[in-house]
Image (cartoon, rainbow, N blue to C red; front, side, top):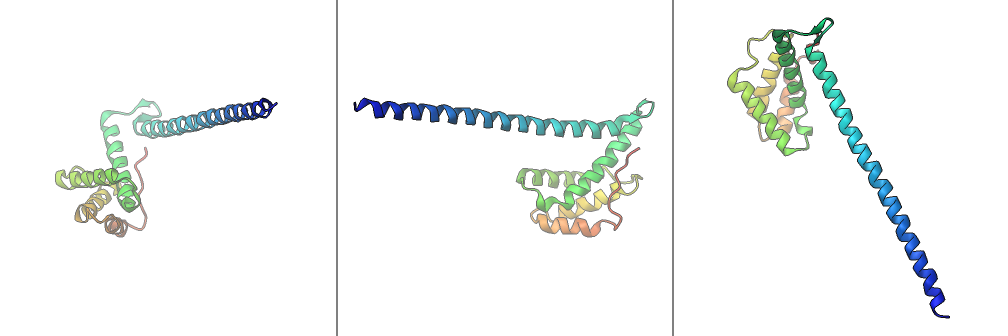
Length: 157
């Protein structure tokens, strides 16, 4: 007679275990699909942005045009990133932005370009970041102060 209450308890524990495994598997599936979907969204946005750099109504743009568009878009993106460097959570990303700023400053890679201001603004942003590499908040304030009131207009032909 004493075996009967234990049987019910064992069956209840087994059912609870199966229910937990089902819920865990379902949760893992949802999380996995969400993370894959997010990565897919990011890759789709990257492809759309890259297409804007290489496309013309009649097909692929010429090498010089693609180069100009790419440099202009890079410059605009760098200015935006430098203006938000204090909000960048990853210390590795901050270091990489500082390295890019030093590259822009040291090589003059964007100097003498006539692309609507993006290159000149990127150079100003690079100077701010290089001047205060260990103070991201100060660098961001400097970049924002150096930007014209009109903001950045990425080159999109």
